[in-house]
Image (cartoon, rainbow, N blue to C red; front, side, top):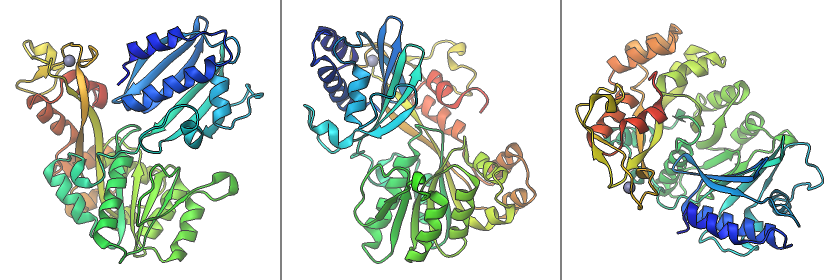
Amino acid sequence: MTSAPQLAAQLAKLNAAQNAYASQFVNELLAAACQQGASDVHLHPTASGLEVRWRIDGVLQSVGTFSPGEAADVVSRMKVLAGLLTYRTDVPQEGRLGDAVSGVGFQPAQKIEMRVSTFPTLYGERAVVRIFAAEGRYLYPEDLGLPEEVHASLLRKLEETSGALLITGPAGSGKTTTAYAAIRHLARKVAGSKSLVSLEDPIEVAIPGIAQSQVNAAAGFDLAAGLRSLMRQDPEVILVGEIRDRPAAETAFQAALTGHLVLTTFHASNCTSALSRLADMGIEPYLLRSGVRGVLSQRLVRKLCVCAQPIERDEQKLALPVASGRVAGKCEACSSTGYSGRLVLAEILPPLEGDLAAAVLARRDSQALFSTAVSAGLIPLLTRACQAVEAGQTDPAEIRRVLGFDE
Ligand SMILES: [Zn+2]
C-alpha cells in the first residue's frame, strides 16, 4: 500500500521537464489511489503548483503540491486518457477513464470504472477523478453490517411485489452500495424466475442476472423517459438510479403503483425528510402513502483505530447523550488520522400505517413526521450513532462531522 507521504515522495522524484512526466505522474497517482481505496482524486491548480488530494473513507486528505509539468501537463494527460478535447480549456468536460487506465502502466485487480470531470479555474483546469471501485466486500445485504432489525426489515421489503423502496442519504453515504446489495440478493434468490432490470446513471457495477441499462440524457433517454419504456419490457423489479427531479419521481411512483417493486436511491438526510422532500417535489400524499414500501436512511462513519483513548471530560462528548466512549488518538497505523475503516449507521421507516400514514396524508412537515415515526418505533440515526460511540466503535467528533449538530 502506498500511503499519501510515500506517494508524495515518489511523485516529487519525477522530472517535470521530461516528456514522460505527466503520464508517469498520472499512472503512479491512480495506481496508489486505487490501492488505497480512494473514492475521488482532486487535481487542483494553484499559484504554487498542482495541489493533489484524495478522499479516503469519506475524508479529503492532502497528498501534496507538485509541479504541473513543463513538457506536458498532468491535467492535459488526464484529459487525453479520458478522450476529452485538450484544446478546450475554457469549458467543463466529462469523460470515462475506465478502459484507458489498464493500458497505461498498471493493472488494477478488477476492472475499475473511473470518471474524470474538468472545470476551468483561475489558475487553470481543475480535474476530479471519481473511482468506482468494485466493492467486492459488500456484495449482499448481510455483508453491509446493518443493525439486525434494519437488515431483517430490508429483506422482508425485498419480498414485496410492488411499491417503492428508497435508500436515502447524502452523497458518499454508501446508499448505492446498499441498493446494489439488495438487487444482488434478489438476483441470487429468484435465480432467473423474476424479471430484474435496472436503469442507472451511470452503471457502476455489472451484476449477473440483471438486465442493466444506462441513461443517455443527451439522446433524450433520461430516467423518466427510460422508465416509461422499461415498463413495456415486462419487468418485476426495477433498480432505478438516483431520483433527482419530479418527472423521474413521478414515473418511479407510477411504476411502483402498477405492480413493480422499484428500488432506488434518493438524496435526503433521514427517512422522514425523504417523505417530505418527495412531497415537496410534487408527489401527492396519497401516492406516497400507497406507493412507499420502505425507506432506509444511512450514513458511513469512520471507525476508531486501536490508538483511541477513553473519554475523560464531558466536553469531549460534544453534547451527545452518551455515558462513555472513546476519542481518536494518533499512531502510524492510521497515518495519525485516528480512524481506520468505516461502519454503517442506518434507520428504517416503520410501516406507513396508522398515525404515520395520517401524518403523511395531512402533509405534516419533516419534524412532525419524525416525531410520529419515532412514536411508531423508528430508531433514529442519532440513537444508533450514540450506541456506536458507547460501544467504542467511533467517537463524538466523527458523529458530528457526519450528522452535523442539528440532528
Ligand atoms: Zn491509530
